Length: 235
Image (cartoon, rainbow, N blue to C red; front, side):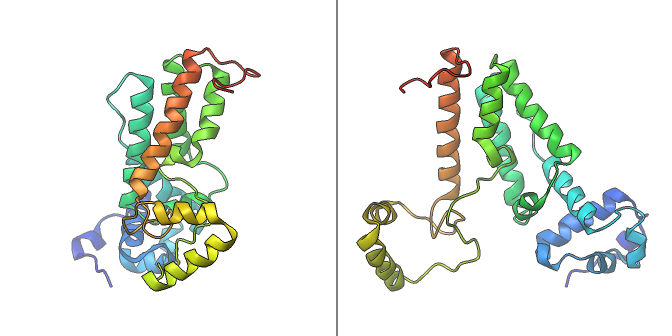
């Protein structure tokens, strides 16, 4: 169990201290261990003292999201494409520092002011680059959760343990009997554990690869002065 110093326990309680302590607790022990009672214990106060600063657990989680998103560095770049790329990778670095944050972000039903400010800055970078409102709208849809530093993948159980080599080989054999092309990709893909994209995939490479494909496509549409109803180049 983590312990606080006497000086920290005597520090005045305010919203910022509550939120940053909650983030530190989640970093150290995991989001499932976070409760108002556990946080109060960490801060050396009674649970009711927390409710003067956060009304309930959901507000606490919203505030924790704001702390994490607030850590995202602003790129020192004027050109829209590298600026957007660096801001997204900065968001990814922030989420990697706080592994629980992705799960919490996925449960939020409305964006917090800090998330809205981050999103607004992303849109502003695209608009400063001359992209039309329509194209920017579609770009934000295409980027999806990557704007906040992660990508939602299909058919992935983040909590599943990777099978041993013999079991994996047997699974691929059975998979290949019905889905040969899926099995072919699974066998040929380079793997470096650990991963959230499947057992052993290189998350960072796959994230940047997909991001660059998207941004290259956006750049091509922008060069061709794309408008709604116009087919994308190559179609």
